[in-house]
Amino acid sequence: MNIDKNPIKIGDRFTRLKIIDFTNKKIGTSKVWKCKCDCGKICYLSANALKRKNTKSCGCLRIDLSHTSGKKAKGFKHGKSGTYKYKLFQRLLHNFNISLKEYYRLHIIQKGNCAICGVNEKILKKHLGVDHNHKTGKVRGLLCNRCNVLLGFATDSKNIFKKAIKYLKRG
Image (cartoon, rainbow, N blue to C red):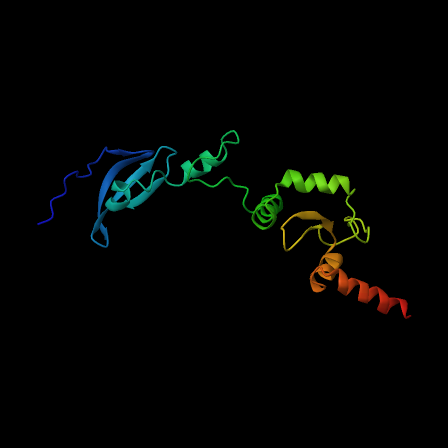
């Protein structure tokens, strides 16, 4: 016989949730309780979810914590993950180990122009990409997509570029 050591009772509180009624429903083997959140919303939760403390509110706590004075609450989203700036930051950090600040520093130094052909980013449909040495990982500068692909296909080989220049000079 399974005896519950800490039974849930009407009036019990779980963070922002207050138990207001018992339902005759079950989720699996767990009883379902009617709860009222501090924000006023009614929700139905299993006893297991309440006891494990993985449900703290109707969802309003996550929203409230994401909007607090720039502080990221542990275990909660910051609300910026869908933005272009955040995606760029994640790619830069993961692929090149540089910050968004460093990217913008390079952008200012190059005046928004590709380091090879000089085309300005405003003319392009894409932002300038980060060019790096594939052997050392060191960032060299910002390039337009065309020049970045050119270097990529040539596998950063100076010899291939010398041959390409010789070929172009033939007319």
